Image 1 (tube, one colour):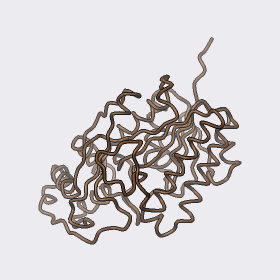
Image 2 (spheres, one colour):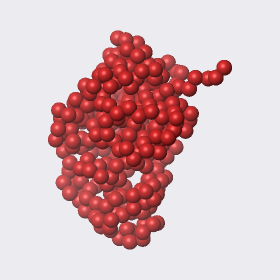
Image 3 (tube, one colour):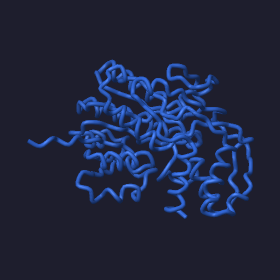
Image 4 (spheres, one colour):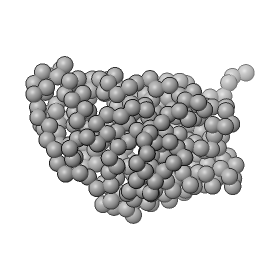
Amino acid sequence: MSLTIETILITGGAGFIGSNLTEYFLNKGYKVRVLDNFATGHRYNINPFLANPNFTLIEGDIRNLADCRNAVRSANYVLHQAALGSVPRSINDPITSNDVNVSGFLNMLVAVRDAQIKRFVYAASSSTYGDSEALPKVEDKIGKPLSPYAITKYVNELYADIFAKTYGLECIGLRYFNVFGRRQDPKGAYAAVIPKFVMQLMAHESPVINGDGEHSRDFTYIDNVIQMNERAMTTSNKEAVNTVYNTAVGDRTTLNQLASYLKKYLSVYDPEIETIKIKHGTNRAGDIPHSLASIKKAQQLLDYQPSHKIGPGLEEAVKWYWENLK
């Protein structure tokens, strides 16, 4: 008698986080199905998996309920990563951010409910803390949102909570804090700060920091995020379900410190990078000054232990960028 291989649906699986999750769970022996419309994800992120018999790609859009229903069919778990990220993007185009992040999320919940999926783990966001100045950020104390993006991610949490209470779904939200690492896209107007700075420094250009550089973030390496998704998906602790968790390291780094780290690690490959000057610009609308997560809840209920602090994570990320994008 052969054991049945469990199937994971990863929405947004051609994106940065989604493709890393796809690779990890394929290597763990799961069947992985990816739903993506390639609005922000890339085919080259999933090309290495196409020949794997346990991998399936479904081209579709979470804004289409029929696509969601098709994608969840016979799956055991859903890791929902599909979203339009970026605070500035949501400020420039709040309607599309809402369509994808709220209407698309609701479609996925309905499809998951009707298909009786075991568990729905979804990407939440540290932006939900809004104007709360308390540090570190603790899951049950949030402020008012500071951007349309933050509103959409908070609404996700509210919907997940209602679906858990009303329909008996098992939902876990992971509030990601400034995730970085291999495959994070350095191109485009809304590129995250780390890959953007790395590419500029490799090209001997001066990165521009918004403000005086003393804003701080709890930068979180991709391997920590993978661990949290796996623990959320597989936990048998009933107390750990139908709640949200900070997905972070529990440490903060200023943007000035970040730039220094990047110059240090990149200068191993190109010593001239150490001499590049950093420029400063104006503060960015919708940004919070400081972000630092408490990870006690995840440690206690999911046995989460971050594998990478900021230094080792940046060192690995820089190596990947140098080897793949130089």
